[in-house]
Amino acid sequence: MSVDAAATPSFADLGMPPVLIKALNRANITSPTPVQAAVLPDALAGRDVLGRAATGSGKTLAFGLPILARLSTGRSKPKSPRALIVVPTRELAAQVRSSLEPLADATGMRVATVYGGTPYDRQIKRLRAGVDVVVATPGRLQDLVNRGACRLDQVEITVLDEADHLCDLGFFPAVSEIVSMTPEGGQRMLLSATLDGDVDRLVRKHLSNAVTHDCNPDKDMPDMEHHVLVTGPQNKLESAAALLRANPRSIVFTRTRHGATNLAADLAQLGVTTVDLHGSLSQNARERNLRKFRSGQADVVVATDVAARGIHVEGVNLVVHYDAPTEHKSYLHRSGRTARAGKSGVVVTLTTARQVSTVLRLQKAAGVTALHHDARTAPQPMTAESLAASGMTAGEAGVDTSGKSGAHTYNGSRHKSASRHGAPSRSRGRASLARVERPARTDRPRLDTRSVAGRDDRNPAARADRPRRDDRYRTVSGADARPRRDDRSAREGRPRRESPSPTTRGNATTSHETRSSDAAPRRPYEESRAVVNGDRPPTGRPTRKPGAGSGLKKARWTGAEKRAKAKR
Image 1 (spheres, one colour):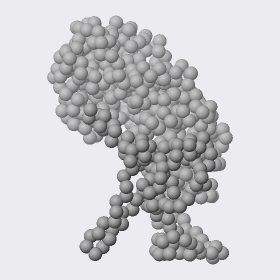
Image 2 (spheres, helix red, strand yellow):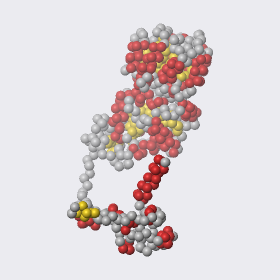
Image 3 (cartoon, helix red, strand yellow):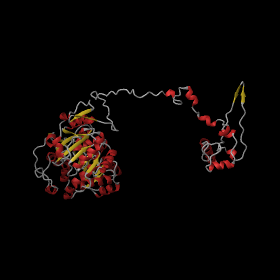
Image 4 (cartoon, one colour):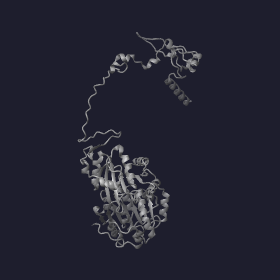
């Protein structure tokens, strides 16, 4: 059964209790949104509901108000909540709790959150004291159920919020098991931005005779302007900083946690007060950074997709896709952080010239049309009003939607993407720019390496003149003879081993090479002291430090001594 959103009535016309209407008026909520007007009658009647609406259209109160209205008269037992709301992220759980707590206090009901990153003991105590509504993420809820700290056999209403994101994160088996633990006759509501894939499996398995409310996307689309700002890879950070300085109270999305941390630090160095928000932070740090952004201590929050479905901050005027998402659903949920509750907002996607076609296809799949700007000619300051007045369509900007071109024309000039180190990168497409043929250098003489001694191993004469490594081990006679300083036998006064005589093997005579320490006599003690004191030795060679003989032999002896000591 499908029901279209009709003319919006008042909360009293929808059958809401007066106590909740007064609490809504205190929160400056006087009329329901289209999705609330469509869902509330069937939800108050206890029917299973399947709702789909755009992000930021008021889905939280669409399922929260029926829970508070239907369960306001009873009382829950310890460890046994009567309503369960399953959400994908911690931020979304905290947002749902903050939206429902003022209304629950008016009816005398208690709301508790259950999610990871926080101590178990505090959550177990809250459940043991008795709560009416539990807002939980699947992983922590399963842990508490297995520990016996929470029971789901008394749940009367089960809600799956952002069911498509739950399935995208791989929570389908856990969510299906959790819903199976609730009583068969209970009311179940599922609200999501898309109803495909694993979401359809959840609907067919756990919902019976559900009423589908598919609100008109064209009518419920928030007042949101989309822009594409094309910049060079080396100027992307400066363009983002200029954009954020002109539009405070902004949210910037990156693809990775490491990128969010680095971008927040880089923006802070450029004078933009920022905080980061991603999964690598502890829960206390995430809540602290979010409080700074809500209170105005920070103008910008740099976040990953973990915050795309959990941040609801009043007065967010700009959403910046610093790294464009890979899916159109992520683009819509990121952009939904602005233009909430009937207000207007601006969404800007920063990209390079090479990625413009990819961003254009992404926006086409999301059903949005954007104005294009070149960062070199964009108005300064880049406020929302100036961007709206100076933008061009994709056709006017010369964007090639085929995706074959590596360079695009903006304002009559070619904006080529560059490599990491600043040099223009060569396009791999058919329509790439022609390579510039450089004339050969003829004014520089060619070097004949074979005429240089010691440069070419193919020259026998050069190879013969080259000093060999083992020359230092050959016998040296005359004035250049030097004893080896690490000859321990000579130093200790023991007789030195004489060089072996030539050995005759058949008709061939083999000559054993001897080291310099074996062929020349040891220097006297006075001459060695003169060398140590810095005087030049009689040989005329430069002085060397004591013990600067064969370091290789010394290291081997030291290693052997260590091994012998270890054996002892």
